[in-house]
Image (cartoon, rainbow, N blue to C red):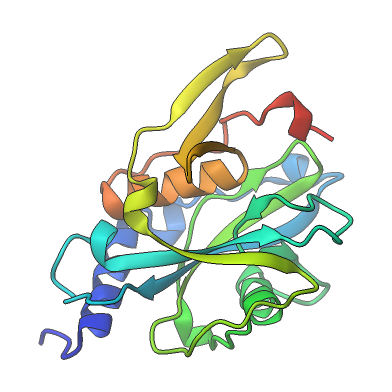
Length: 220
């Protein structure tokens, strides 16, 4: 039976799209990659856009939440970021992602809001990031926490439905990914997460991204 509401149809379509990367094929960081790195979760928090019918292209009917980190934060202040943070002791990645969304943008999303996970991404700066895809349709209006979030944007998925740019650098054999967004380029790890989500959900391709490099300035 077809879901009755546009939001329900969109959610079902995202869940179906994520089957391109089933849980048993998701890339999970191994012990060597986790050694000396802290676990973190980031979220692709999805919301239906105004006027969504449930039947149009996902890129035009769904948006995601993107923040600019508060200038007062010690790490990565002022940078564009997906809601997320460290995984606390005793938490799963899914629990951490939901907690961070609550703390950063004021949306309390239950376990049933988890649609799936993307590949782990080990960073040069000492983290293993697990991306969580969350459904925030009908969860109320986000309320950014000013202690953590300077700006909150609800961007159409069409904003990331573009081919990225890949650069070569002398410091690494791996390509540096740059995802065009908001008139600039977003690098990994955020750029890698956005690119894989675009590939899997919007293009139906099980593209891998863990090999993609970060720019040298992000290695610390």
